[in-house]
Amino acid sequence: MRPKATVLTEQELEIMKVVWRSESVTVRDVYEDLLERRKIAYTTVMTMMRILEDKGYLSRDTDPKASVYRPTKPKDKVVGGMVSDFLNRVFEGSAKPLLLHLVDNREISAKEVDEIAALLKARKGGK
Image 1 (cartoon, rainbow, N blue to C red):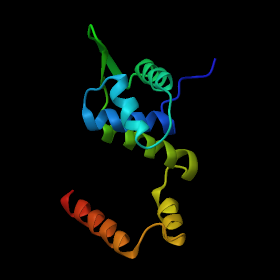
Image 2: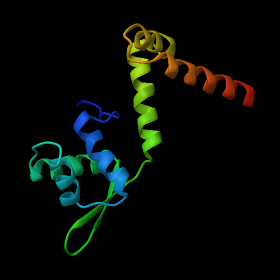
Image 3: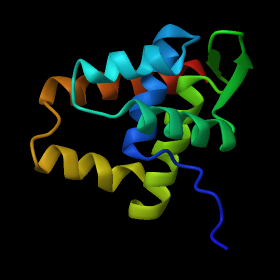
Image 4: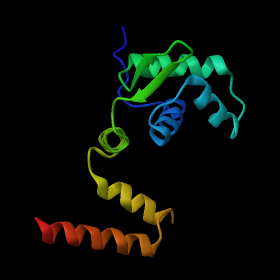
């Protein structure tokens, strides 16, 4: 049997972003939010939210009218874990090749590089 994935799929992340924005939602809330951007079936959203609950990302309270879902993990922890996983899988844990790739492909501006350098300098000075 395959181990459970710890990284969210694109569709799971899209649902979690809606949940994090609202803090507590029903399947219908998420469905209507996603429907504004793309075509999706209500049953697909319901299934994905149950999967997220099984994976431990959502908790569910059953209300007489509808189940209410809440995030069990803060966004910064989940996204941070996904970034770390990506760095480990693709760049052997080093951020430098990722940053070089972003600079070389102009996916990061000189201004953003300066901002990152200032952040690094501030953190180094603060330790």
